[in-house]
Length: 200
Image (cartoon, rainbow, N blue to C red; front, side, top):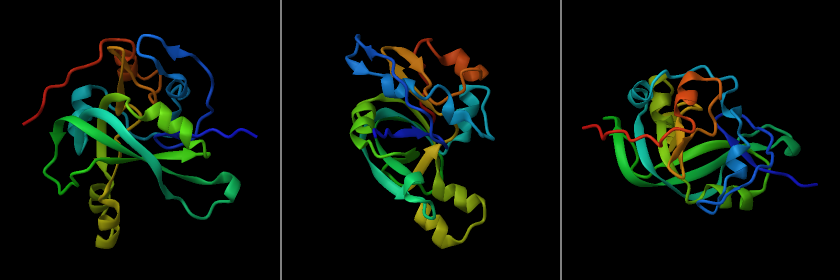
């Protein structure tokens, strides 16, 4: 049986086939598979890039440089195993960074299911875009969780929402996890890849 690995903001989605992007020689099949699945059960949405930028602990422009298996979520049967892909961002530009005590390396956790790591690595590594991130340690601190939980979570980031990953697809904006019916996603998708001024 062939198993595939899908990475989303908070749930797994079915991987379907499309085709390669001949202009960049990158096969976008895996990214195209999202079809908005990352937006399911989401409680936070943003109306503008400005609003999403202000809500993030850090906003980066860069490329995915590494993908490895990350932490796992215990207590599930082996066939329903769920864990994280740990994605490292090679930073070209820090657009915004809060005054919080954030780590210098940007490692982003994506919830995954399956075990086809070759597919995910080949699809993700080298992909460039904008990453709107929240630090998991800062979230734990804001929730009033104990210091040991805050410290354990501080090395890790997540997307602010399914809208928070905007990829550069041959000069056009591609929001692979976003709900295609969402107003912000509609305004971005297929248009020019956005430039956001660096914040002081």
